[in-house]
Length: 246
Image (tube, rainbow, N blue to C red; front, side, top):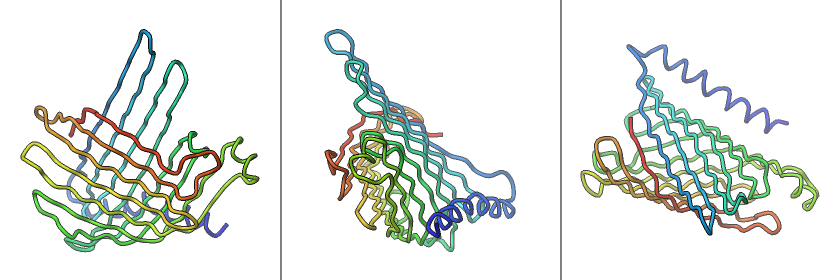
């Protein structure tokens, strides 16, 4: 119960913190974002379809920088669903100075193919920019967190329990660099280490096509050190999508 209250407190603090930051803003808050979409459709002897969508928003409110992410993945092969994943996340960063900040975030993910109905993660801590130039950036975040996972009915019957939770050490490393004036490379790694290790790595290459439109190629690897019975510990996802920045 104490852990649930801690999670709720951190989660509920974020919007109020953002609001508090807005009291010091002169003028309108600044919004920027990226919309990403990819789809594959095959008919005839083989009927397959896949869709990948992502919306990322960034809001600047004086010393606060708030980030919101919504992702969705859906794949179907011969009328059988082979992948389905939805992710919703929000993070607030309070800038201490030009290189340091405090953060609080909360994420909610639905992926029935892992054996869980949903996974909820909340964390808070300290972040720092080690490199921050026009062509290259490197930042890292670390702090305590809490993860809660609800098993689906089939997994709950097989495992003999219906949920898992743990206090975790949360860490993020994010590296970006411009390869040229029209292309960018990014490597992002996120880990939550408690009673087990849950990690996510995304390696991407973005190339500008025209104006604000770009092509993005990404390889995403998800790792669970202790998967449920009959589940794999590693999932990989390769995407080619169109990305629009605004």
